[in-house]
Length: 242
Length: 140
Image 1 (cartoon, rainbow over the protein chains, first blue to last red):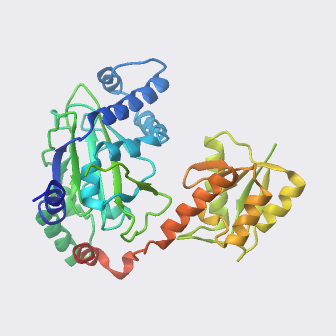
Image 2 (cartoon, one colour):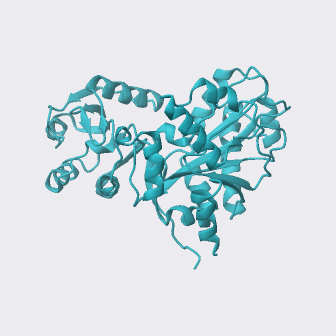
Image 3 (cartoon, chains in turn yellow, red):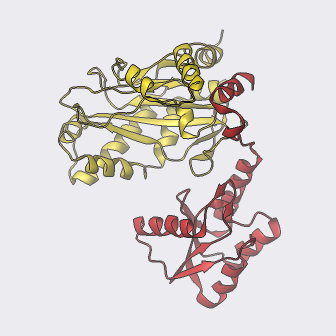
């Protein structure tokens, strides 16, 4: 079985998510550099990533939110992340794509009083059933600050149970999931998952904020759902390896 | 140096955006980008040629025109060509997509992208429900 067939099998017909090495770290490094440059502008001084992560502890939530909004102006981030995982992306969606216009940089602050991502699957946001997500931390993740994922069968079982009750993202699901353990990842690894995989993050304790970047993409030959030009742009991956 | 924002019919490609919401979107975009809006142009209901904007351009010589979305560009070739010919140096801003640029090449590339999106089928989530959407993913 080829790499492409194996990835498609795991993500579409197997567990629904996988941790994979980023194919081109030289390209991916540009993403981390773009993040550091943007934050250094906000902080008025150039810092290394760990100092930036440390300096974010204790920042007001509104300030963190403002930084994340400013980071959405990093229009190249989306393309960088897709290009750095070219073979993975083409295995799932081919080379003619709709990719997220503005990749998300996500900053999570440790502590029980901080925001955390409510468990959800991506479909809830209005992306189509044919959209995939790549999520990659900008540093090693070994303090529980990452994301937990439920495999495809467990996610579907919860979807079905909620559907019977006429619920989506109901309180039982929330209670059931919030103590799950996040995946540890190395810098240079990414998680890819399909839009039906339940995931979220739990509280964690650390001296550092967690910084990650994510991008969504789908084949331009598959139907869209509610996300349209507001969210996606047309993009063609060129120079594919034979 | 005159900047105009333009509201159009509520039906904007795949979106339904009332004109007051169009103004909110453009004003927010203008504020974030420090663009002072001087003239607000309400294109008439059912109009999709930006004809009022072209007509007013002769009088006000716009330097920037703000629209809510790329879907407000004329989709019929002859109307699109008329816009490009009449406003070759005007900088167009599309607030929802966060795109800006001027000239024939820019507007053509935007128009091509819109056509690419419009060729794509669109799923109505209400027709499927959660489990139906999951099945759709398996079937297609």
